[in-house]
Image (cartoon, rainbow over all chains, first blue to last red; front, side, top):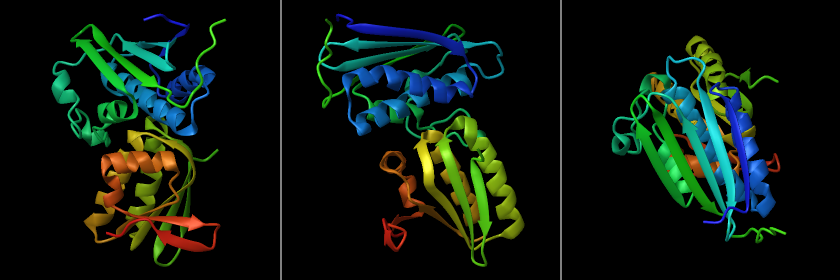
Length: 150
Length: 116
């Protein structure tokens, strides 16, 4: 699908950057003039994905980084790719079950993927143990304006 | 800016939260609130979301954890003034069934969002 605009950013997997990451993606998505609710949904979904990388992917590993790519696609669709090179997920199906968490002692609710799935239109998760995890989310900004690529 | 401020009254402890409630900030809130609850054993714990501008599922973990903490000794949990974004996350998680949610309207009247 044709990319109308694109932004890439890589940052250290530190919890201080959770706020930065979701704000950055939303600032880019604002070009589509989405509604407050659409932007809040995107902000929450991005926060979950980035937090997963920080909390789970790089558990006990220092110096890891997270790569975020945001694209504006035709029909007011926002594409967000969040990739880490962390421990990977052995059983994606289990990890995506609502309320399942590999870290319940830390009060992780086990809802990260549920939020991502509910607050976007399409969620794809690919992962390899020891290699890393990539999450791709697509969300159509229904009330947004058509992106002017001229 | 402090992410949590506590106010103790005879029958309740109010924790006024501020800013963005994510994984980064949840730990400090949890530690501050739990310390005060264990010390005071209030019949009611109020988590006031009036000044919270964002919450993700880290906030749900925080709410569920405080619900269990209050339940341990028969106390109750109330959530005040969650924004529409926060309410959406609460609904999705089912955490809105663990606590009474109240909205202050113009600072005067109160409306029960739900009842247990």
